[in-house]
Image (tube, rainbow, N blue to C red; front, side):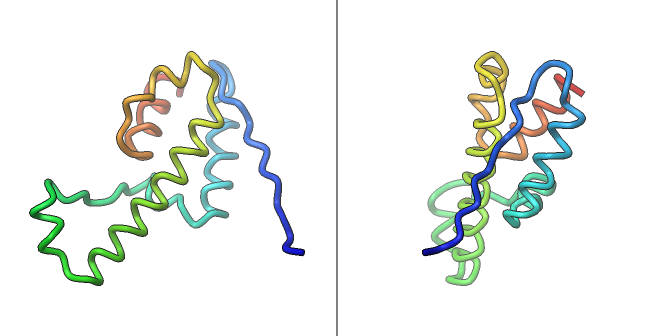
Length: 105
């Protein structure tokens, strides 16, 4: 049987952004995803631009998107309903993190 790690994500409140962000960074680093939050990734402007990518570039883009969605999932799990309302339209984890950082830091 595979070892399972149960993740417990601290809920972000109006007063615990510092602790929450430290714990989230640790979790996201453990998941090898912190880079996509910190640096973001380059999204092709449209489908035509994406079609011109090499297979290697497409693979890198696919991995970046996968990481980004994983991070968005963790962020969404770590916020309450009112905070979720602030980030629900964020298209990337970098954007969601920035919104939270600006509004709660």
